[in-house]
Length: 416
View 1 (spheres, rainbow, N blue to C red):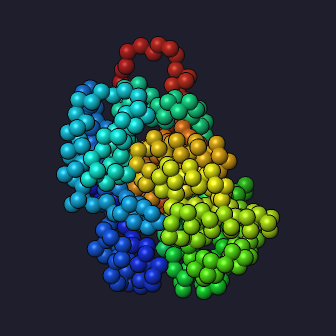
View 2: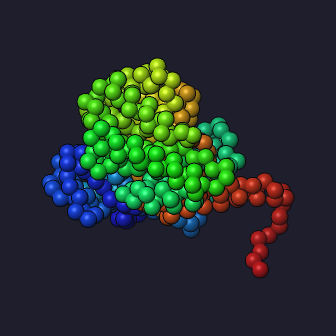
View 3: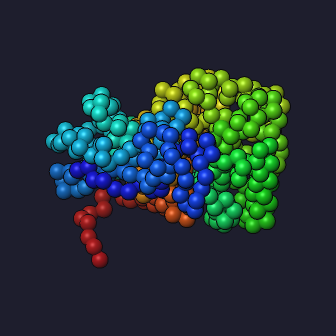
């Protein structure tokens, strides 16, 4: 079945926001400019692919487009109106299909898709459900299925969680510190006048404030990484002058000490090639200054091929492997392993538009592939997304450990 459901947050027209669309409460005034948007902010739409297995059990996977769909080379916004008929036809195509190896199931389906389908959300949803089906068939966790087929070992510990503070840039930092998030706060630095500053002064003050809050309220031994996403705005305020950008970014790194600063998308260009070229220039300029700030690529590193190109180019320290953009979660898993092999730290990202269902499945991908960070999702708060991914990881690790400790034969199943 293909069931229309809600995404975990909202889709925003990033191009309209960066062009100066004004906030009015939670709304944005103005006309959208990205195809597929009828307003600048719209509720995220998602689809649940529900498979009824012949043993009577049910598995589910959810697909959606990321918050800033249509930006940075991404495919446009997923909608029920344009996709449900195609997805239901695909579900009919899946009937009676035998459950075999997970990776081969995904690879086969990638080749069979109708061109009218919005492929990344569709494959994202279907592959989650198929992974659960294989796990049920093999009587193991989803993490163990992936690890076995990829030839790796499941992590013995939970993966560090990174959080997104949304517009609540102070309160949610405090929440993240209280809950000891491994990485904070993302920051949502998407407006020059209110969050960055015409010379970057607002962001500089914010980084200093974050450090002060960690030092004041962080528990003994708490040493998170600081992660800031600026959506290309540093490039805008410095007219893409590499020297000026490098000086500014190095200054941010000094303000972040003693914590490591990871800066996402300092520039946002109009093509993958231009993004690689300017990223490389900034990366080299920072290295020349012995600057410890780590650069993160997100936009234009959208699918597995994009990620391979960025990783091999040597222009970045980290890549945000944004799972809904990659379609089948087999692609996400392979991308993470290939990043490590290329000497680039991978982030198992996603979106605030992810659902509770897709969030839990991505925890298994994280435990199998061991990314540097795992995004807390859904939503832009701290509490809900962080507890969903933390709890799923620690439950899964407990189940795996318990099975290792069980005797070979435990007799019939009983309840008490």
